[in-house]
Image (cartoon, rainbow, N blue to C red; front, side, top):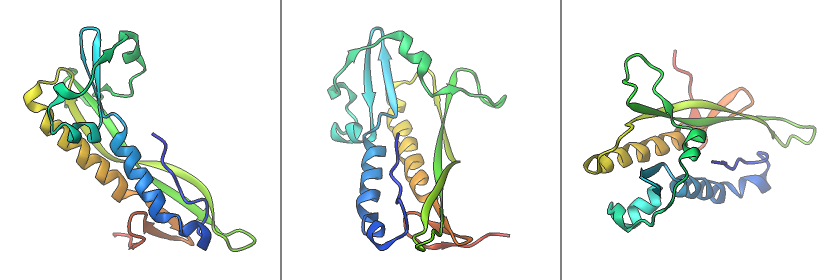
Length: 170
């Protein structure tokens, strides 16, 4: 997924904060979090599509599935010895965007670094009665990703969602 960032902390950019927040939330909610495969058919399920059908996944259209596509899937086998190989681990990253003052004191975006925010562990074979629980985990992880993201400017950290100063914990 591609997340939008403020290009600078100048007033003209700051006027776009609400639009960028809404765009990021819409992107996260509309991006598929699961691809359910049965034989040669698949369903892509996002938080939005799951909510639209009130959890009745049979109303989500299926499409032909090429089994070679799964090789490019970002869901990797659980790497911890504490988790069975029959589970998959999905990592959710927040962002730390760094702004530096320019010659015009515009505080331009210097760079963005991903930072692990949460993980979702799901079974490789997902039973339908567990789907609501799994979708709840995805929803919590996506919300956490958005609330954990930070802006760094002038040696201070600010929460991206509220602009509140984030104090260091010692």
